[in-house]
Each structure stands twice: as structure tokens, then as C-alpha cells.
Length: 419
Image (cartoon, rainbow, N blue to C red; front, side, top):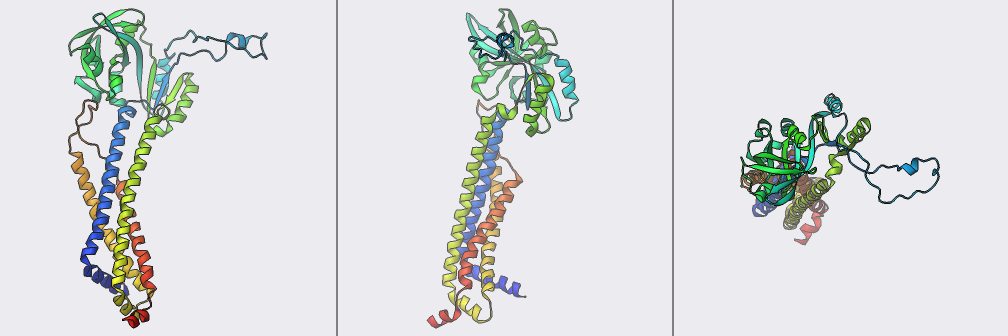
């Protein structure tokens, strides 16, 4: 019965100052709306920017790096043991970029439960011949089906059909920037020169655009068999194995394990793209900071309104306490008022925030540098809504708690005597 009475009194006080109550509720609504919109948009933007690189990057890359031997012949000599040996102009050891025994490694990776799939790859440095000019280029020899399944290759082919790469012999998909520099159209035949001086003609069957302009100016794609033919290598020749894991967080440990197990060099996605993770973390921190600041400002608005309400309702508080209401009851009345404002404003803010996100998501976003993005990105993560709801309740509770403490300690005798 007492709780119903407290709720009834709280309702009466809210309605008595309806304009101030609505101002406080609008403050909470605006704070929650902008909190949801800002975090959803910034998180979607992070996903988009990271996807430009991370979706195209293997979780673990296995390769054979050409480097100098860690121990020079003089270090292995019994005669010079115990000496400090200084060797200048050390050259890389006579080795190939090929991954040895790649077939056995592929079979071992396919049997690993942690692995989603493996896409073999060959990287070949070439020159694009444009009249008397040679342009530096890189041809990536790929398994078209696996590259599309694991790393979304087909989504970045902006001209032609990606399947033509495997269906058309001696074909190439040029980077958009490289095609523009060469003025090469789909169906044209271009000529390339390998690092050994061999000249080969390839048919252009499509354009590739990653969204990174400098990459698109040099990078192109061919099938593994075509690239092996370009380099004059056997069918077993593979320079990279791109591994995609079920859990990307396992990548650092798995990379170390594979490096030791297969006697190859390995790098994980976290190490290869640490700068992108740092950028995402900074942007997310800024978004949370701005959103929470908006909610705190709304909380101060409620605090000021309740403070004024308490000052104007001194007579009513005195009467309540004189008729048997305890300080705790008065405290509960004003906390109920604050929470009512917070819940109403919070729910309305969540609804408006979600609606605003849907509006933003429909706005066209067309740019040549981001071919896979057609609209502004939004991330509808339920976590944002839960955080917004909890924070709005906590903020409004605290905004009501401190004025209510003041109201609960008022001596009704002093107020009535003063009147």
C-alpha cells in the first residue's frame, strides 16, 4: 500500500511540473539517441575500414623469406671459436622463395580442426610493358575458388567476371589503377616481362579494386597455373600459404606452432596489421567518451530540475513528513521521479537511436576508392543498447539520489514555522 502511495505522489509531482519533466526527459532521450547513433556508426566505420585489409589478409601466412644465414662459415670454424667475428656486406643465402614440400603442408593444414581453409598463392614481380615504358607490377597467382571463399576476392572485382580468370587460359585481372595507367580495357591483350627477361602476353578479363590506391596501381591477379607458367616453375611451386582460422585470436600462437612444425616463416594477422587495430581502438574509445559525456550532461540537467523541484515543494515535503512520511519515503519519492524520467527518456532514446541508424544506413555512399561500400556502414550491436539503457538508469538514479537526500533531511517544523 505504501509503495502505491509513493508512486501516486511521485506521479502528482511529475505532472505538476510537466514542462520541466519533459525537458529532463528530452535531455535523456537526446543523450541516448546520440550515444546509440554515434557508437553504431563509428563501429560500422571501424568494421568497414578494417575489412579493407583484414578481410583480405590471412590469419596466418606461411612463406619462405630470403635472408642472410644467421651463422656465417667463420662462426662454424673450430679455429675461430671464442672470437668476435665481424663480417661486412653479408649477402642473403642462395635460396628460393618456394615453400618446400607444400603439398604435404597443405594436407596437414586441411586435417587441422582449427583451420577453416587454406588458399595457396604465388607472388611474382613483373614489369607491365606499355609501349617503350615498363611499369613495375606484382602478379598474385591464386586459387580463384578458395581466394573467393576465404578472402572475398569476388567482391573486389569491379569489372568483368572473376570466374573468367580460371576459365580463360593465360588471363589476368588487373588492378584498377594499373589498368588506367596502361589504358587497358577488358578483352585487351597486354604484355609483361618477368624478372628473368621473358615476355608473355596475357588477356585482361577484369579489374580489381581493393580501395587502397597505391596497391591497385601495381597489383594484379592470375591463376596459380598461369603464374607458374610465367615464372617457368613446376606445378608444385608455391610461395605463400594463406591460412584462415576458426578463431582469429588463436593466430599468434598458431603462427609460432606452424613455423616450428613446417620449418617456414610465419606471421599472424595481429602482427601484420597492428596499426589498424590501434586505429580501431582509438576511434572506439573516442566514441564511447563522447557518448558517455552526453549522458552525464543529461544527468546534470535532471539534477538541476529535481533540485529546483525540491526547493519549490518545500511545503509539500513538510506536510508529508508532518503526516507520518519518513525521510526514507521522501527519498524514495524523488528517486522514483528521477528513474521515471530516466526510463521514459532512455526507452524513447533507444527507439529514436535505432530509427536514426536505419535512416543513416539508407544514405548512399559512393566513392571510387571503396567499391564494396554503397551506403554508410552501421553496426547494430545489442551491446550498445544494453550499455545505453544501463547508463541512463544509473545517471538518472544518481541525479535523483543527491537532491532526494537533501529533501529527506528537511525538518518540517522549521519550514512550517518559517511560513
